[in-house]
Amino acid sequence: MGKKKIATVQAENDKPARPDGRSGGAEKSPEASSSKSSKKRVDSGVLYVESTYNNTKLTLTDPKFNTLAWSSSGSLGFKGAKKGTPFAAAKVGEKLAEKAQTLGIKEIKVVVKGVGSGRESAIRGFISKGINLTTIQDKTPVPHNGPKPPKPRRT
Image (cartoon, rainbow, N blue to C red; front, top):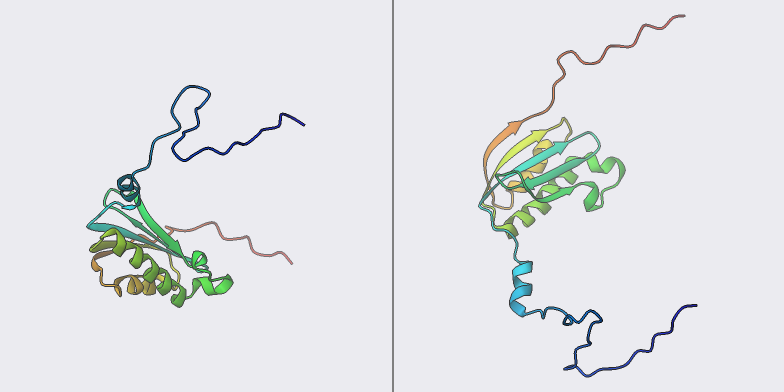
């Protein structure tokens, strides 16, 4: 069943020697851990709202379009038909606004895509936390003529 390992207890000051001769690892200082927890500070951002009949998704990016935070109705615990409601969309907007405040965002541009009922309420929920809104742009795809209709039924 393989080799048996015998564990030995060592004092705190003794570092176990590695077989390759290197030291046990880099020591963590309190300054190094605090720099890891601090996130990128951004003044402005772009909020993408994708609203379908079944769900509402919000993505917050910096001006260079790198994603900073996101949320959706499903990730907040709404299930089934409740995900597509304006109430769920407002909750998603509020949750993402709290994340944006921790990142230091003060103003946003909004890009809306989709025809769902959560379009407006997601934006209202987001700006209710005190973040300024500069522009709203609608990028909902509109078909020029759509798909070919089905042939009439033969009876």
